Length: 101
Image 1 (tube, rainbow, N blue to C red):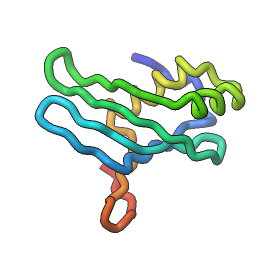
Image 2 (image 1 turned 60 degrees about the vertical axis):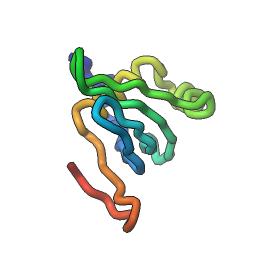
Image 3 (image 1 turned 120 degrees about the horizontal axis):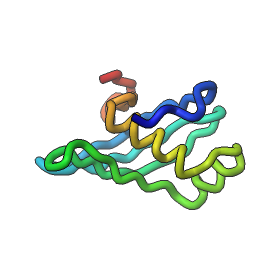
């Protein structure tokens, strides 16, 4: 199990859009770290081989994480684990209100 490397800077993850089918879903959202909102895109897989996330962060987001002093690879693992385990806040697209799963 991957442990969070940054317990005092726990990222809050918000999923704004989730669409997909039987085997995979596309996710779009953002996370907040050090009072900064950074965007992500991901593909969630959940069939053969168990649950997995293919996470995509922009060069700008990776640069900002490095500026904050994070190891970007370790930080991405933390985000992937949180997404797989459902440690996210969903945003209702119609009302823009938060839904905790």
